[in-house]
Image 1: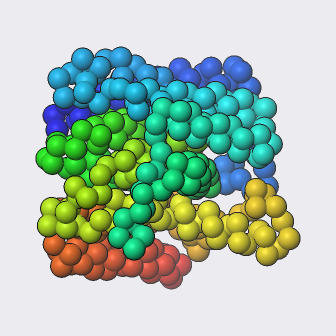
Image 2: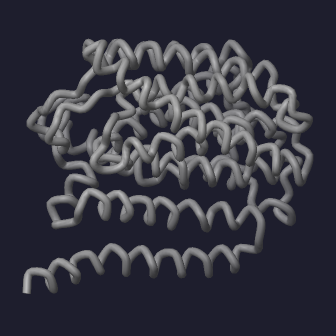
Length: 363
């Protein structure tokens, strides 16, 4: 655990230090988000936060490569994830500067998924009627779909200062807890790469948040949201799709369904926002790639919540969904149910208390 904590702290420190330099570079290069009707920010703000995250990740890898435990996580899978993430950051940097069309970005995301496949990162089984081993072509299709959905789910919630970075940090923490349990406690070697990647995810998000919290000095941009989405998707696929399901016993780690349920649990809020936006736009006769101001964070803001409180509400609900699922990997289901009840009660109270505070202030 100590080496992964060191990795997390190094990634956080590097991202925190590098981000101001990237901000200056973004301003000089013209990668600045101007004010549009659908935007929440009121002043032009530089993008390219994804470049700072990528630099922090690359330097972290170089520093921790020779640690005794973490060093074992470096291999073919980690290299594939790094190369796919690098491609998406490059595409994102171009988009943040020149605004590529949605189909071009989608093609780039699919190409990044293809790199993962080349390096052997794909879903191999699904818990349907027991455990079904997927034919290679079906497994590859499922892998690409998971990558595309996860990337765009993170992209969709990147509309409020600090929101995406915070939610991804919470999601990364949930992934790390399960990956660490598999890799270190139960000795599943293939869980090493997800442990490393998720430690880096948490670190870069923590390091980036001070610069991205309201009022944001820099946005992560598509370079950042696609980068984080790819890392989350790749970690989930490496962790859940390739570990032998027959080795995961209910006595030790909960139901066999858990490994594939976890990614959807930790990304529940972004996924709900993504699919509701697609349905909403298609019903209105619009392109699913069009933009609007009906995302969850927009509605919370219109309800009178501040930027900070809106982000905190969504952090709390993300943790409310993710934490009980992770606990079920460690403890009996009744313990997970108690945690779920407590978290849900707090989430409802915290969300509603904002309205009560506004009513008192109005009086």
